[in-house]
Amino acid sequence: MSQASKLQFSTPGWRKLGALCKVGLLGILLLPALYTAVVVAGEALVHAGMPAAIVITCLLFAALLVIPLVLRFLLHLTRFCVILHATNIQLGRGLSRLILAYEDVDIIRSGRTRHGCFVRLQGGKDVYVVRLSEGDASTCAEELRIRCPNAILIDALGNERLPPNPTRPDQVVEALLSHNRLKTHSYAILGAIFGGIAVVESWFAVQSLNAQPPLDRHKLLSQIVGLAVNLGIAIALFYQAKKNSVKTRWIEQRVSTAFCDSAIGSDSGTEIQ
Image (cartoon, rainbow, N blue to C red; front, top):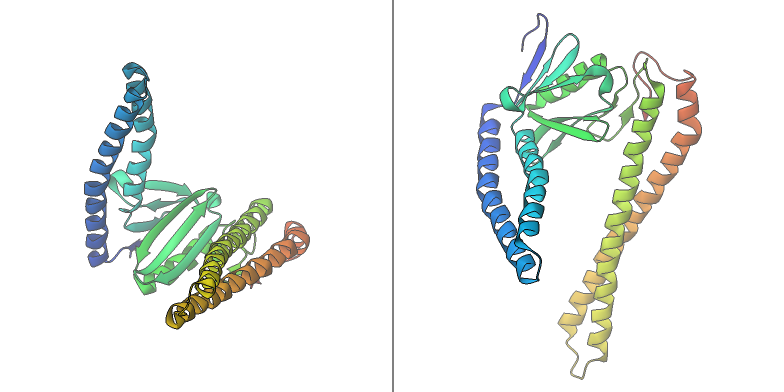
């Protein structure tokens, strides 16, 4: 890590190898899958009576849309460093190299998954993730927070720390609201999924009760346990969605006004839990 004019944080070597193997495997699986999908779709459309020239044109147009997205996704997996220059951030090198302005970063997040530690940057709708060592991940996040005037730092516990002296307060508030709305919607969608599973489990339990004797007690018990577990998870997720919804409304009513009027903020940044 250079201390002169820039700071550099790199992905550990063994993690680079794992990511490259993952990219290679995805490439091997995706290319035949895309080719098969194109061939099958083309044959089906031709057999349905659509002219071959129109089918080929449509498939070429779809390929021009899909291929850049696939390449972008694969390049996203091969960004192995964060370099903090005087005026901007560099993610990755070579073909995967990407330059971001400090002012355009909305959210900085550092954390840990079962695959290791990471730093994630979000600017608008774009999200960039770099895997780092445990010490580098936290240090990199703090250094980014110092340099990104409008970025919210989200720590490993999920606490949101607002920037002390933003140059664009409205950008900060919008990023904070978007982050919490996304969390609310995610909890609600997952709650609906588990609630639907609970409904299916209850239907099977009723069918078991109405079945011809003898009653299969083990089957019924497993269905009731499945119903209880999925219903409990659904209730917990809906509770989190409601809790986050209340927090989002509080941000809209209190934080946005106070923050944009510079009524809050300090050298250490305001923390929202």
